[in-house]
Amino acid sequence: MQEYGAHIYKTVYAVLHSPHDAEDVTQEVLLQIHRSLPECRLEGFKTWVTRIAVNRAIDWKRSKARKPEELSEYVDNLGPGTDGQGTAMPAERAAIEREEKRYIREQVEQLPDNYREVVNAYYIEQKSYEEISSSTGLERKSVESRLYRARNWIKRHWRREDFE
Image (cartoon, rainbow, N blue to C red):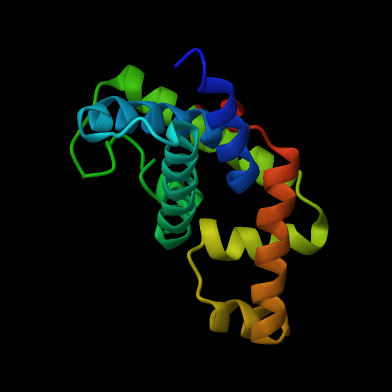
């Protein structure tokens, strides 16, 4: 781990471009290497380690792209007094959940105007591309483009730690 940890992190970061995700994947890679050591031939060890890192990073990136949008799920699950599965929760937890929801809405309000409208409609109001298109007068492709650009803007300007 000490010898190859930095190399693995750099390799994973080159694929993911996210320090937080790179740390998670690096940890997974190190665990995978540890589990696979008994079957490993020590010839070309660094190449083997690098290949595991690249493959795991690509898998992570693909799985993340397949997942439903996390912001939408997170906001949806913050219903008043429930834990997202409809189960009642303690008042303290409900207050924390309301505060988190308020914080997310405040952050969304700080988005540039051309992104805020489509992000609100898609994630908060849960409208489809077609519904957003008809209510805003934009073409469907324009709605898709704005959401894509908004996600990129969010990735560049927001820190994951602010939402954890």
